[in-house]
Length: 186
Ligand SMILES: [Zn+2]
Image 1 (cartoon, rainbow, N blue to C red):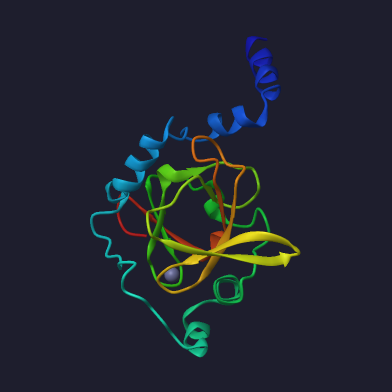
Image 2 (cartoon, rainbow, N blue to C red):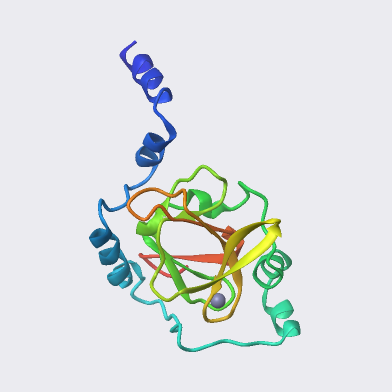
């Protein structure tokens, strides 16, 4: 009986309470976010070798076609969007680092991820210098598109309805990411 009333209570929580319950809460203030950004390598597996954002990777289109599978190619090189709820990375909660599926540049850590209930992996901040942005008008209304600074691959869109303190929602296609768990290699 007690359990039932607890569940009933949970169901009544507003959405903002749910993301807190479902994942580690984001830091309380901007200083905490800066710390996550500065210390991102603490979540990188000891045996992982990753490139730097200052080492650009420019390849001809036919080379990308060879390296990427069709879903990755569609998102990364054609600015496509995967269907919501299709990525196994939606439920990835282990400690680790999310890198670009095109070029392995580290983009986010597990500590920057939160549950947005949109069906796409969502993050409230990024590893510094990982992305460049531009405006796009694919849905007529202007949106902020973001792409990997190293290979130019499209990853997703940035919205301003994320959790405090950043209020950012980096809405990322899961197929454009590869997850490297902190323990062992991916
Ligand atoms: Zn990349």
